[in-house]
Picture 1 (cartoon, rainbow, N blue to C red):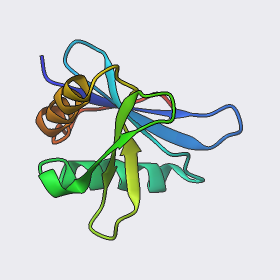
Picture 2 (picture 1 turned 45 degrees about the vertical axis):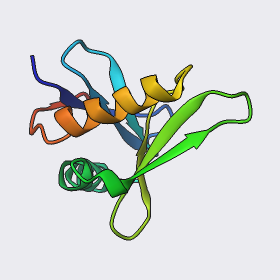
Picture 3 (picture 1 turned 30 degrees about the vertical axis):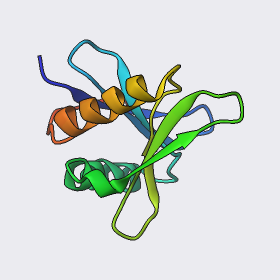
Length: 110
């Protein structure tokens, strides 16, 4: 099964999206957006940028966990991956975003 996006409201009325893999695991989370249209533009940006290796910024947190940010051409962060125990599992998460990010399936939960 292919992945999908879930678009939802936050408790303060803003909007966010997550990208889910085919197994329903969240693989990318967005920032909060003030409007639904901006969140939809964020999804379009993931779809456009997810296949490019150079758009992924690999990071390690202060507690030793690994994560990544997906950035647009203008270097703005579009979404952030989960925290992973190893660099290899983070890299597998990136591969999953590359595979699932182009999906056009959006579940609108707003």
